Image (cartoon, rainbow, N blue to C red):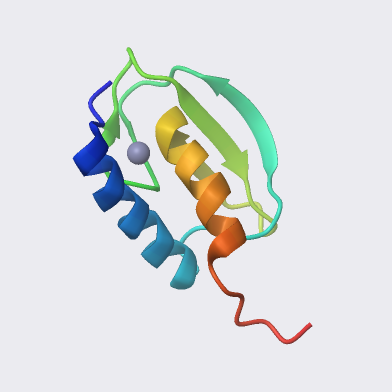
Length: 89
Ligand SMILES: [Zn+2]
């Protein structure tokens, strides 16, 4: 794993900011699959997902495809619950 504990905190901040900026969904998404993918960029931390790492592929409400490292997926799953929503509904 390339993510150590210190870096994990930085990634958590980044993912939280991306949720707040609506670059990552905060709503329920469809999980398409979990598995390796080749050199795609993680939408959480912005780093490449190397073949040795697990990737989670998601589909958001607007059918935007989101790719996350397995570790970034776990952080996103936590952060999307704690980031306050700006919605009124
Ligand atoms: Zn990542």
